[in-house]
Image 1 (cartoon, rainbow, N blue to C red):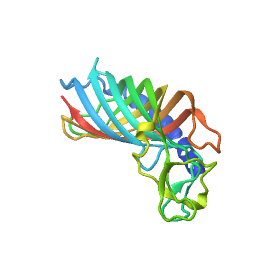
Image 2 (image 1 turned 90 degrees about the vertical axis):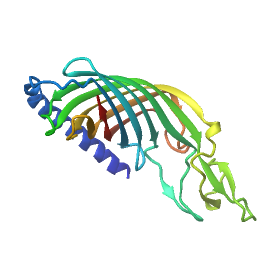
Image 3 (image 1 turned 90 degrees about the horizontal axis):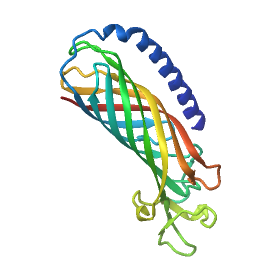
Image 4 (image 1 turned 180 degrees about the vertical axis):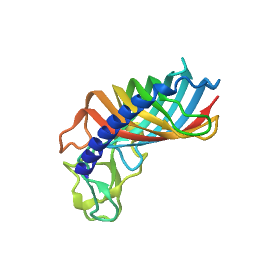
Length: 248
């Protein structure tokens, strides 16, 4: 799985570079077209990234037009971040992640710029934009709970997983997603991303499309996700986001 994510990461880097070259070649030739009088956008999206799960997280973004080709943006993202060496196993009843001690969720508060490289014709074609943003990230570190069966009992206990004291053969599965949320710790950091957005909306006031790019996130301290493996305070990833929204 780790090799798959590494290949995906390098593939997206290559695709982003090639798409950027294509957009720069064709983009500014289109900027002389008459601009529509729509100055605000609101979008929401589903995020997939190379150090996340099946669905990496969610994104909300507001954009305000500055010029015909430039938009100021404000955004909020909430994503889950996984350790690259996580391993899902099953010993008794249901799967759990071996040696996992904490979840990491990132709440990102972003400000950035979108630069339109290619304007789409009314109700057809694609709009291509270079998107960059950065800001504060709050790492929410939540204990990973398991269903643990003490010796000589068939009644599980929901406890924070500690690989040094919990025998793997007595783990019945993972605990609830929200268990331990009151025990979460906040670790601040910074976040940067850049990518290309492709909008294919066919109607004047609606938005749909996808954004692909790279991101960088650094926390003020190491985040202990798997205590038996190396842990980090810096995370990088390739991401893909599908977005929808409105323009007015």
